[in-house]
Amino acid sequence: MANIGTTFTKSGKKAVLCGSGELGKEVTIELQRYGVEVVALDKYANAPAMHVAHKSHVLSMLDGDALEAVIREEKPDFIIPEIEAIATDRLVKLEEDGFNVIPTAKATRITMNREGIRRLAAEELEIPTSPYRFAETKEEFDKAVEEIGIPCVVKPVMSSSGHGQSTIKSPEDIDKAWKISQEGGRAGGGKVIVEGFVNFDYEITLLTVRHSGGTTFLKPIGHHQVDGDYRESWQPQAMSQQAIEMAEAIAKAITDALGGYGIFGVELFVKGEDVIFSEVSPRPHDTGMVTMISQDMSEFGLHARAILGLPIPEVKFYGPSASKAIVVEGNTREYEFCDVDKVLEEPGVQIRFFGKPEIADHRRVGVILATDDSVTAALAKAERAYAKLKVTVK
Image 1 (tube, rainbow, N blue to C red):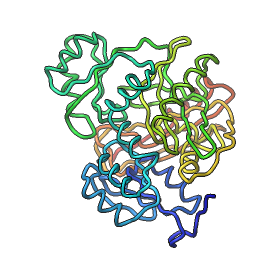
Image 2 (cartoon, rainbow, N blue to C red):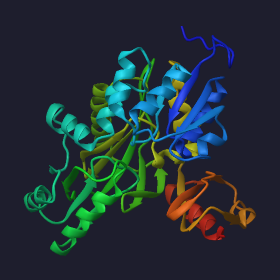
Image 3 (cartoon, rainbow, N blue to C red):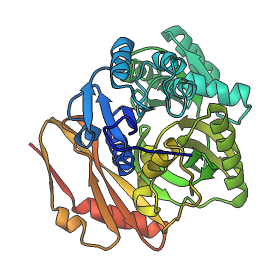
Image 4 (cartoon, helix red, strand yellow):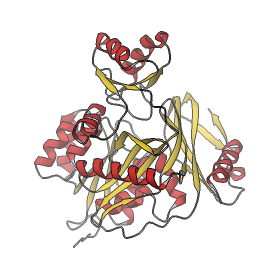
């Protein structure tokens, strides 16, 4: 039996959110719908989730001592990691001491390091993946590239949203790719993965929810990325029934191995009827922001419901939908969205502004959502809306 008491009382529930970006902001809102007290953590002040959380702390979550001190002070019912740059070994210790890490400390530790999740998938579960090598030094890196061959993709084992990622298309790119990987990782320089280039027809995110009633798969989400960073997504991605069944089997195998309750973003490559595992995130996925308009319960609402031990008997899909990230370039602490009224002129269009306090070089600061009779029409509508938006960097 799931019981939730009054907020700010002993019977109330409390969650500490480790990472307070736009995805964490939506999780915070959804948890508060159930009366859960939310404490938001991030390395900078005024992060998006901090705008709506009951309380916040600014700290580096790679600082295990600082992270543990805050968690022991707050005594949460749930510790919810929302970013990669966390002292995951300290989360394991906290879980051993009785704290509830979502979905589990093991899942957080394995998936926030590309080496852990790739070895679990390919070597333990024997799930199809691209060929890969790991490298910790420039010499190992050069050898890995030689063994995998060109073209290949280079990623820090600790990164997300394309940070530190690049593609080697010719021998001239090798040194540059190593430099990018060492400067762009979430935890600084270090080990990288060199992946063979997969000749796929398309890639998907299969949002998979583990909850008290079992496992629920959402309709596959197609997406377009630039240097590993999401730019637009759509739901559903057209797939054959055979490919869907294979994708769901892979997603279930990997999420069952990770365990716990919550939503997982399982990234897969699809070539004809074949499905190849890429990555998995044990939390809401940026490409899944499309679910804020495509379903009766978004990925964030489903995450909150699963975390609280509540069943998910049905997810109602409304229809073909699309999302388009609003990315702004510049270096500023002040920017303004203009002509928002024009953006929302067409029916079936919504917009979300994340409230990020600063732009450095380029940053995703919002998202446009659209729904229509087909995915093609929804994408076109989102593009039209995006073209009307003007962002003034001050």
